[in-house]
Length: 99
Image (cartoon, rainbow, N blue to C red; front, side, top):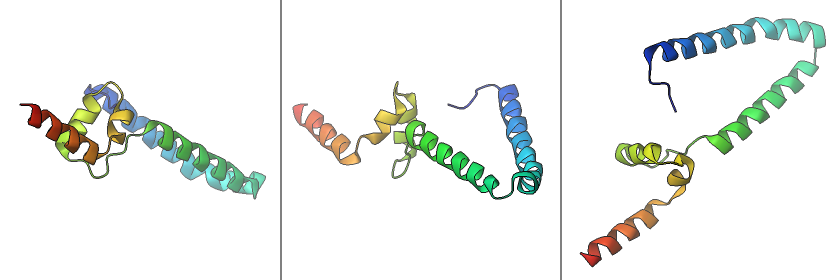
């Protein structure tokens, strides 16, 4: 998920900082040039971000750090995060019952 090397982190930080500056300085110009259509662009941008987060991001709510470690080590973290804790607890009880 996150880059491992320090130079990658620096590059990521520079990219986000640059995009924030574009956002800061481009918005007043866009409002002046295309007026109300700027809000349509913002709406479309937010909608695309929402779809991106829904499809690609992993839910980490109500997971312990140990569970999150296992989730992110799995081949499909999104699928691993969607398994309900109750199902995992039931599977653990079944396995312990066999031993």
